[in-house]
Image (cartoon, rainbow, N blue to C red; front, side):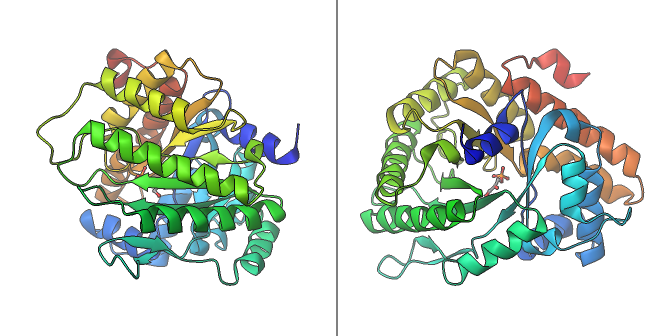
Length: 336
Ligand code: 13P
């Protein structure tokens, strides 16, 4: 078993998943301001540290994706943040892209940047304790999008990024996110997501990526957020599995879904059904941002010194996600 494969399995196995706490300062500011908490670096650290020192970290969280600011911060217990995470048994990870910018040639779409100087930044993150990384490509759906240009250029960037990350002995999370914004059908989401993922693997193979040492982070197959043709959770699970079976090479050890704007419960319920029906060898788990943090953030915002109460809320959410990663979640457990 390669070292990279070992890291991927440590992050994903035994009902564990990933806590995506890698919001850029801009995004984190939006999240904090939405609950009326000022976005100071102290507050950003306090909320994150509260989650990272929760009891559920040991059982439910195999990896945490950090942002550049957080990986360099020190917790109130004087441990560095990566140390705090490693001590709970989870693997520290880091977002290394520098964001999605307008795609020249198709200005309604985005291309993710961050390749320049990446090799040097990776070495620094490795020294700080990171053992896996994240890069997100975003794609919109409409009758003419995603364009060939967007599918091709984002896949190429994801492959270049992955090659540099593996060279530095870390596991790349490959995240092609087909957004749920819009009124498209689930069938459109299925077709476009399959096309996007297939192109990513075509490029990953050209760039000689060890597929055994990556984690794929895709969207689930859903009807657009403003579509009037919603499909059932069962259908979401079946279409998602079909898309991944058709598009992902067998060597990939695991798939960790993004929540992408689904509610906490919806993201949990869909993951649970995916695991109930999972007839592949892929581990299917979570790499949720909003669907792990939303309730905890809301609770914390009422009294930012209530650490224990916030951790209880987070622990419940993480436990629900972990059960879903084993196909053992149920509605009754949710409301306990
Ligand atoms: P969400 O689960 O909130 O979509 O965030 C996951 C993520 O890391 C997006 O890049």
